[in-house]
Image 1 (cartoon, rainbow, N blue to C red):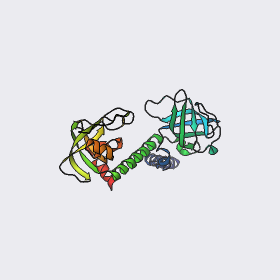
Image 2 (cartoon, rainbow, N blue to C red):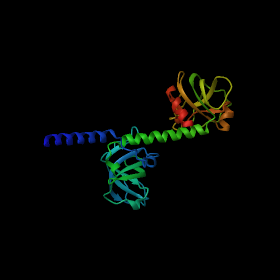
Image 3 (cartoon, rainbow, N blue to C red):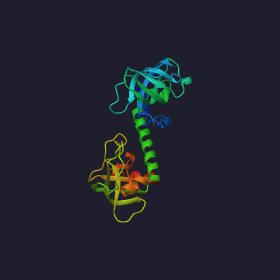
Image 4 (cartoon, rainbow, N blue to C red):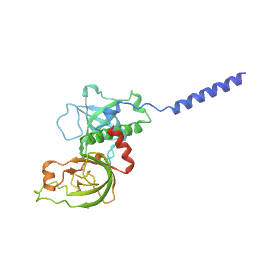
Length: 271
């Protein structure tokens, strides 16, 4: 009888453990405020207050943090693990020497020393600090952030079309004044498969884009013949539209979603 009772107890415990494993943790909504605007996320310990590692004079809201773990960092960012960073805290009154936190930050000073601005942080007493799903949660927050940006562009767009780039041309233009930041304008002619927002004549539309690698435009989409996807077309500013004889422009990376599979996603964001 005792053996039977032990078997039943073991099975019950096993089922309970399986249920716990299968139940996904709930997404922490606090990340919706911490992740946007932050590109460097790390764990660290506060070792100094009102002290800097950077060559600055204003120490009023700053301190030094020893980095223990990098959660997320920009591409090609220096290896900051086990390094001391200057952190400009969002509220230094809430920070004490010895605090261990997960910091959500944006770099503002990169050189021999690194300085970051704190968007917010999570204390080590918060269960999220040691949550093994934190990388997945941050990705979810990034996806929500990206969707919000795309939705904003859709709301302000002239045209949203699904289609394919069939040709690239140099636009007909009046003589332009020289500029330090040359976008090297080109026109992508798009064969429209579906008009998702707006109206136009015919089945093709020409859209201006910045083909240059200048620092102001290096993230702008660089189109080639054959590119397919969703094009969220914006209104060109008056001067550019007049000089290049085209009112349509696409220069923000969020305004081009490569691949036809994004049609359903854009429809959902337009609802």
